Image (cartoon, rainbow, N blue to C red; front, side, top):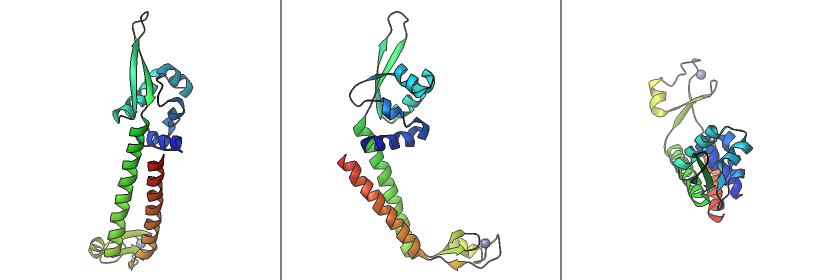
Length: 169
Ligand SMILES: [Zn+2]
């Protein structure tokens, strides 16, 4: 469960292809970036770019060690689990807020739709279009908000459950 959450976080921050970096990072041991790069099948610069992006959000941290012979620095990385979960929690809360606003708007406002083109307008825009579709000439019908609200509430519940799961990790 934790791993899936962490993967989701990485996927949000740097994109889905990078999410497997989670499998290579530890939460209390620093891992050599060359090992990470090798296992990801990426160059060291590509790997660093990914890790820097993640570290911009404070979700990974690093220490560096100087190679005495070659004179260059190698970075060692670990994942910040608590911060990552906080990050995910914020994303979920944002989604929940959006849903709440959408539900409220559906409960209080009227929406119109062209059923043929499957497009939707709020009342103001529908009025501007004279309640007639630009594309096909069909007259708008009033959108059944109940159905939409039901769908939103389902998602609200899903996100609510997810929040609970994140809190319980
Ligand atoms: Zn239409």
